[in-house]
Length: 229
Image 1 (cartoon, one colour):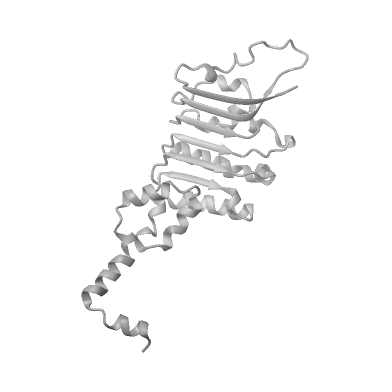
Image 2 (image 1 turned 90 degrees about the horizontal axis):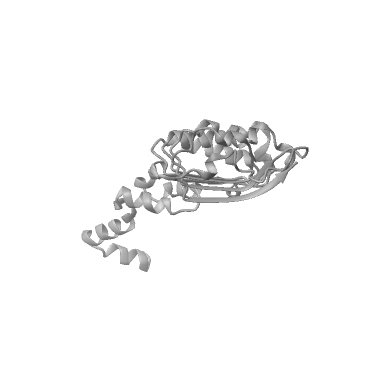
């Protein structure tokens, strides 16, 4: 028997129990603490990977109130899609905050846009208050009606979002004046496009058709705009 084996053999029952308790301490953490720890991770992929730490953690990620999907954590877009769909299908509790980030032109191809639509609808139906979308790398050639603000966010106009952040090319249109987003207090739009007809006289107040920008309950507003003609 080796020295390590001999030393182990001299342990009494109480000492062995102490070692067992110490090595499995993760299983004795309260669910609330586990969920708080997982909520601090930058990526939901990392949260899911903690399922191997302890039996109690196996399903803990399903109850975390924060979701963050980062496409840069995956080598293939197809793997990223599969992961997002899988996570959304295996969990059901309320999501306080949801963010999706993917900087690749493939994301904007028509056959793939349903992923983003699924994420937005999921957020709206699960009580999400803070929604952030970062899909900045969009070629102009992909712009069409589906990337107008009124069309893009139509499914969630009556949602309970308090914070709405969008980083990526999105055409602002008069449809933004339609009822909705009554609870939004912080709005950040980075890289949006404001279109106008070059043959018409320039409107000195181009935001007059966008009541959302002037709503009384809006505490924070940040806009980064490009002008199209």
